[in-house]
Length: 105
Image (cartoon, one colour):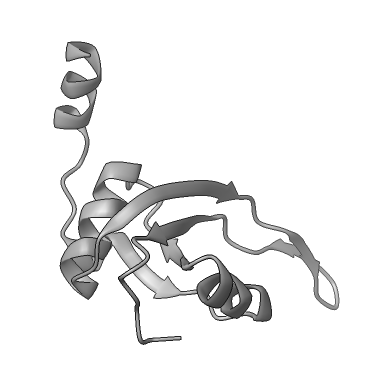
């Protein structure tokens, strides 16, 4: 247990507004927010689950039960003469307490 605490202390300390970049608004996101009380955000790649949890609780004044993250790799995209790549990003699905709601969706 002490080892995990040492790792989190050495991580970069981000402010809440630096952790949560934007909400992801999709049809699946609407379904999850209504049925499962789960909200999806694009987050900073360097943020840990604990930092994401604290940021959501502080910014939206809600109680977070669970945080699940995914690292999404960038896709290849082709333009006229060259091939490019979209950026890689980190996605977080945040499950809230049944009494809590976020009104951005």
